[in-house]
Amino acid sequence: MVVSNTQPGRDVSGAAHGTPLWREDREFTARRPALPGNVTADVAIVGAGFTGLWAAYYLLQADPSLKVVLLEREFAGFGASGRNGGWASSIFPVSLARVEQLYSHRAALDLQAAMNDTVSEIGRVVDAEGIDCEYARDGFVSLARSEAQWARAKATVAGAEKFGTRGQWQLLDSTAAQEKINATNVLGGIYTEHCALLHPDKLVRGLAGWVEEHGGVIYEDTAVDEIGKGIVWTEQGSVTASVVIRATEAFTPEFPAYRRNVAPLYSLVVATAPLLQGLREDLGLDGRTAFNDMRNLRIYAHPTSDGRLLFGGRGAPYHFGSKVDSSFDVDEKIHDKIIDTMHEFFPALRDVPITHRWGGPLGVPRDWFPSVGYDQNNKTAWAGPYVGDGVATSNLAGRILRNLILDKRDNLNSLPVVNHRSPKWEIEPFRWFGVNAGLRAAATADLEERVTNKPSKVSALLEKLTGAH
Image (cartoon, rainbow, N blue to C red; front, top):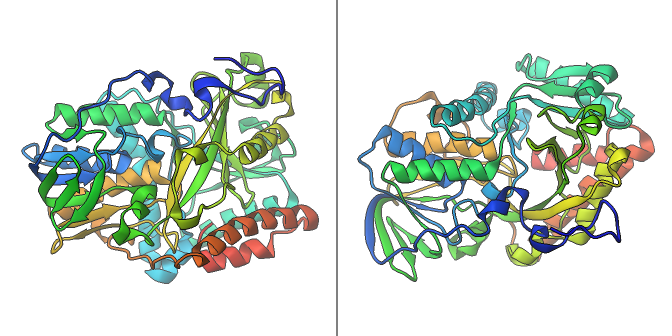
């Protein structure tokens, strides 16, 4: 790996330019065979990311006699599952107030409790199955680095207490917050224990290995052309099954029948070279705590197990027609903004090399509300999209899919995500205008707060319109 000297701490070259940090040792790994022809199965799963793998895991665990087949266009974990920020958190993309508005107060509380339990469930599984994915549950801190953010932090904790999720968030003063992450301009923050860090591609590989050891079959390099009633068609052949699970996340719009169900948005990430131990200690990066600040255009960061700092964020544009392409995985302008933000947090990192820049699409439904469902008459099930919070939510989805398909009674079956139906996105060009206007509004809200030192009115309107938080 060669690091350019023209812009210290900023340039990367070679395979790392566009290659996720998590995948470096995958580059020369042989892929699994493609679908060899027409086959039958009890369950056919389109997509071998977290959703498909968790569904297969829980189905085979509940009924080892099932014949489960997973079809993947590239390789297991190719999509968001292998390129995300490595947070398994209890964050749900829609506010609990919006969940209450759509369903009930009890449903909102049950959903948050299920999300909290999911963080623990992932830890239980990787421990029980011996999956070494660097799972570390040190929680998540959201720093307040302006007066507007500090006001929002206090309102978040007070609102959670009033809503009934007592203890979900802990308010930190500036000293306590900086003891966790020693960034600049920290006025305070909020902390939750319900977040773990993990190496996503190692989790993918561990789950895929378990599925295969227990009778599941994963076909890679097998692009699905069409999903029908109990059948999946590919160029190599078809899979006929009692139920087909669509686990396609941001790639869902590539199927004409689901063109307007999901809008793919790109999230971009950088990683530094390993930091010296003394520097890590000075900056509070010697643990495994996930963190961000309370800006409106989301960012996310954490120290990796090998001492790097991973730093990512939103802001990349939505591409016309819900297009997804590998050329969008690196956006120099947005990546540079992410690096600038990281240096704003930690000026001492300005001369530390950036070894990786990458990105990928995440799926967003029209109401930002993830869903899991099963249409028995059409022999079709689905889960997602997750609006960037899928590392944990996909595990919850896998358990719900098991319950619905095997008719297993469980309290999870009554969660508001089950059979939730999101409205379709607008036709183009209205979708392009609307999505990108929303991204610009979030950035504008941050600018407004820097000018006024008060919580943004633009942000409040955006949350009212979308329910996102």
